[in-house]
Length: 58
Image (cartoon, rainbow, N blue to C red):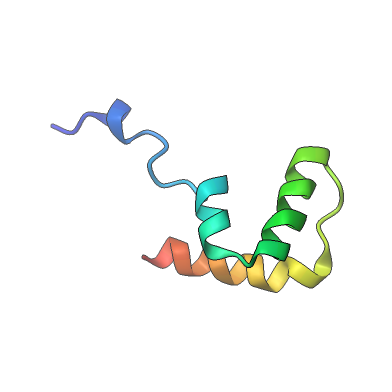
């Protein structure tokens, strides 16, 4: 039987994962959006979506 508590949160597109997969400027803009609540900069949306898709398919 699997221990679900040990696995909880293991598959999350976390800040660490974002930083590894996004360019530095995109990561900084996305982090600012998360931290401050600003509107997502449309110029980074495609890169973020592609990184999330690739990560999710692994």
